[in-house]
Structure formats: structure tokens, C-alpha cells
Length: 136
Ligand SMILES: [Zn+2]
Ligand SMILES: [Zn+2]
Image (cartoon, helix red, strand yellow):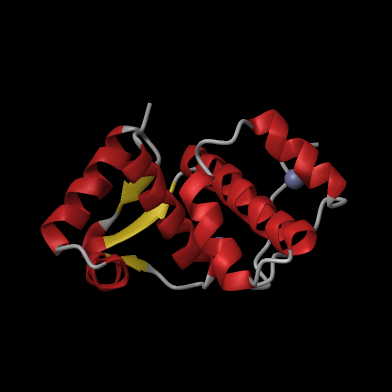
């Protein structure tokens, strides 16, 4: 199983793809504030898990498996975020921060129940898609 930091990294890759930008080591390094060699190491670990495919010219793609896992993680993050804003009246930025602290810890059944209560929102507050493949 990938560890938490690998999964966080995978989520970041998917977010970059959602912005339709190519995944490049230098961009990643700047975005997450870790050095390019560490970025490469993460990419290699995820490649070993068949979640990413590294091409020439330092560009990286997500595999079908990588996308499936990333979408499920982003679903959970975004559902928590929307839940916090809708039911707890947190502001969006705080909701995002709080969700990031626990999005890997809350069980899938709980998240799915929250999602149902929210009536399966299609978009989060940042206008990003909420992927429900795993929750309906
Ligand atoms: Zn967020
Ligand atoms: Zn859902």
C-alpha cells in the first residue's frame, strides 16, 4: 500500500492534470516546495506501483489505476470540505485545511454517508469535479 505522503503526492498530480497542465518535475518541485530529486523519487515510487507512467522529456502521466485512486482521494477531500462548509459553517479555506488533516483517516462508509446527505454534489467550492465513481 502507498503511504500517506505518496497518496498526497498522487492527489497533487491529479490536481495539476485537472488544471490541464502537464506534470513536470520542475513545476511539481515549485508547487510542493520539495527538491527535484525528491520529486523524482516520489514519481519513481508511484511508477513502481503502476500509478504513474513517466515519459521522455520529463513529463508524467497517470495510469488508469493512478487516476482511479486519485479521484477517490479527491472525492473524499472534497466531500469533507463541502460538509464542513454546509453543516459547520466553516469558511472555505478553513474547511480545506481541516479536510486535509483527516481526509485519509475517515472511513469510506462515513464519507459516503456525508456525500449522500449532501446529495452528491457535482462540484466543490473551487469548481473542481467531485468524482462519485466509488460512492454510489
Ligand atoms: Zn481542498
Ligand atoms: Zn460521492
